[in-house]
Image (tube, rainbow over all chains, first blue to last red; front, side):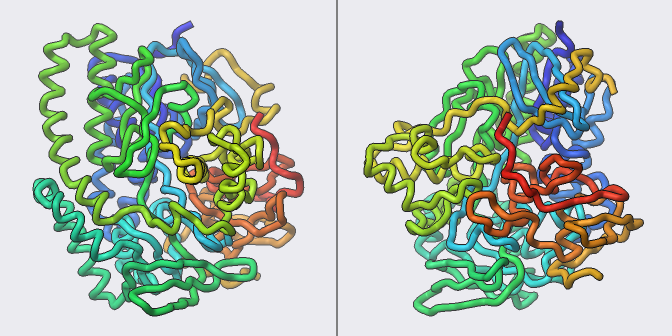
Amino acid sequence: MRNVDLVIVGAGPAGMAAAIKAAEVGLSVALLDEQPRAGGQIYRDVERAATRRGDILGKDYTDGTGLTEGLRHDGIRHVSGAVVWAIEDGFRISYTQNGRATQIDCEKVILATGALERPMPLPGWTLPGVMTAGAGQILLKQSGVLARSAVLVGSGPLLYLIAAQMVRAGTPPLALVETQTRGDLFGAMRHLGGALRGWRYLAKGTKLLAEIIRAGVPRYTAATDIAIDGADKAETVSFQSRGKSHKISCDTVLLHHGVVPNTQAAHSLDIPHRWDVAQHCFVPVVDRFGGTGTAGVFVTGDGAGIGGAKVAEMSGALAALQVTHESGRISKSERDRQAATLFAARAKELAVRPFLDRAYPAFVGALEPDDNTIICRCEEVKAGDIRGYAKIGCLGPNQAKAFGRAGMGPCQGRYCGLTVTALLAQANGLSPDDTGYYRIRPPLKPVTLGELASMDDTVSGVTE
Amino acid sequence: MKPDSPFLDLDAAPQVDVWFDGTALRLPNGANLAAALLAAGIQNFRNTPVSGAPRGPFCMMGACFDCLVEIDGVVRQACMLEVSDGLHITRPHEPETDNA
């Protein structure tokens, strides 16, 4: 039973661009996405929010409507609210939509599962009121909800973007507590050549910073010893900056020190991953089109390595070009003709990345948390527990599960996996590659018995 | 009576009746449930089965499972649901279900 030529998981920039390109040459495409409306996290709910608050969110965001409009094509079925929980060889995709489980068969699969915030385990990061900066942005984009008294903590361009958006909305953050140092900036200077090729990013960053400074938002840099305190919710953020202790009262803390690929689906298909030293995370091993070595499976967009929305869009189109070529719809020369422009544009967009990675590195205090800091939010396992397991012979993350349930809660290691790998690697004197990652098995998201019982093999979910 | 909210809500939408752990709330119809509860001043969505520690929304994108609530006997992620009229939401009383 074959239902469609191509299933794409994830309707962010990569998934949308892939769907549009594949449908253009006549492939039937099912675009499965968890959210009620297309856009992914970067363009979350863009069709509604662009008209309501495009002025606050900015043009880089509202430009996403170009992609969401492109989905209105007869060859594309955008299945919204679809939670994919299994991808089996062949390929058969199982997902839940509106409380009903459904399956769909396809020839090719493109995983465009995007990014997650890099886990930022700090003392107090599990308290209500502490969220990722991405969550703060999602609240603004989708719901028009803004924190009235927030402290932004961490490093990277996204922190400046959300701070500037909060300024425009009339609720500036109380402070920016930044973890990068002057040394990081100097170190980044050797990548300035690449950054200048991507000068538009630098110009945008400078403009955002100017907006933040003009609004009088205090900035503390080179912050260390960051801790969030409160009885049953976040009440203060304390930290050291340039030899002084600080403590700021607030209701909300937004954390960010970069994003990492969401590799759950790729890991579940046993696609090999490698440790990316510059970005401190695992990335799937892919070729220039996103091909994985498993015939018919592609990984594209930020899920294949962080490049941002524009790179994701180009990579999505490139994966679709290869899929259409393999399906016999376009010749190799036509694939290469179209791909050449995309490869060149992608290289130009990626040029700024080494500079950004070096100027805004992940916060060491969260990569190597104190023993008492919870690192597995679900099972409340602490960094010291993991180091203790290493002392009694625990070599890898899967063993750590047996020692103390780390990674066995409902998030399935999404917010502790990288930390557990890094802690074990450091404690055992092994590389992250040798230490490995959690073995990910379906269901990728919890499925209820009721949903399974409603399993409908007539693929109604796709034709709705 | 709404508790004081640490959040500002820019959007205006027709409101519907919702109950959270027995407290009556008026929330915008069709809004993201986790966002609407936060804007209504609810911060503690649940207590962890391990230590009883309070938790609220963390990722807002369906990945962290910290915003779990119980509706009609099923434990679900509030950030992946929309507000509808007459929702009865409680803090989950059972430990979260296994992943199957």
